[in-house]
Every structure is written in structure tokens, then in C-alpha cells.
Amino acid sequence: PPKKKWKPTKKVSRSSDTRSKNAIKEAKEQYLSGQFEAAISSLEDVSTSTRHRSKYRRQAKKLKKQIEGLFESYQQGKEMLQNEDDEKAKDKAFVQWAKFIKEEKSLFYSRQSSYVAEVRNQVVTEYMKSASKAEKEGRLHDAYRLWTKASSVNGSAQAEAAIQKLQDL
Image 1 (cartoon, rainbow, N blue to C red):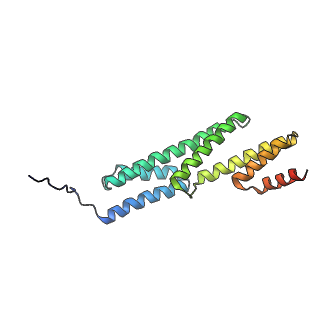
Image 2 (image 1 turned 120 degrees about the horizontal axis):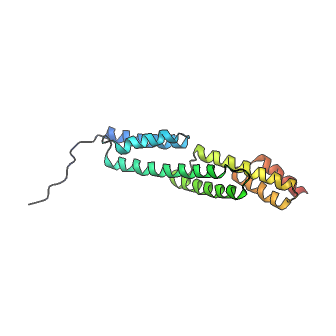
Image 3 (image 1 turned 90 degrees about the vertical axis):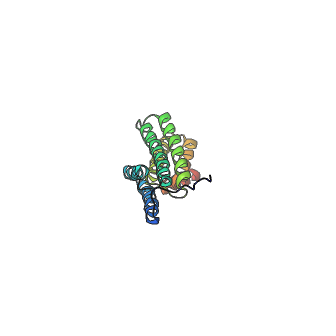
């Protein structure tokens, strides 16, 4: 006998698909605007509800896992930076955050979350502190290198001015 063609037990409407897509899109926007918990909650709802087709449940589950991983990376960098006097911890935090920024970029392409903006500001602040300290200690080469790093991260006007001052010496 010929095989019977599979038919869904429930008919899923186009409006249901639209709701699913919109819920996933909204979760992305929530994350990007710094609302991690809300994004996870939205994705959890989509990934566990039978109101959404399995295709969208899988998408939501995958995105939830990716966003959780991003946020964990971000948090780890913050924790590493807690000891402000430990230069090795700062370096590890910066490496962790560079990984975080790269991972987020691969997920959201040209869009950046508020978490990335916070990381960039923190990194620039730390580079500028270290550059000022190096300059005061007479380590002008190190100061120049650190001011340049600060400038490359966020285009800081203060860093640009310090670089110009060192070049004029």
C-alpha cells in the first residue's frame, strides 16, 4: 500500500507564525537593550509553548542558549576585573571581553548590545588609568601604547589628546 502523507494534527495559522517570529525578534531587542532576563523569559516562553511550531521552538531554544553564553562571558569579564590592582586579572578580563564582543558580533552582526557599550567604556577607562600611571612614572613608551589602545577601542578624545602630547615631546 502507498505511504500516507504526513499531516499535522493541529493546523498552525500564519498569524501564529508571525507571533512566533515577533516574539523571537522582541527577545533579541530585549537583549540588545540590556534586558537579559526579559529576553530569556521571552525565549523560554516560545521554546516551551506548544502554541509555537517546533521550528520556532527550536530557534528560540538555540537563541536562548547563545544569549545565556554571551551573558556568562560578559559576567566572567566583570568578575575578573573586581580586583582593580591586579594587572594580570585585568588582562584576563580584557581577553574574556574581546571573546564576548566577537561572539556577540557573530550573532548580531553590526548591532551591539548595551553590554558591549559598557565593556568598551570600562576597557577605555582601564587603559586610560594605566596610561596615566605609566606617564607619571616616566614610562612614556608604555603610556603611548596604552593611550593608543584606549583610542582604538572607543576613539576617546582624552586619549587622542594624550597621544598628541606625547608625540610633541
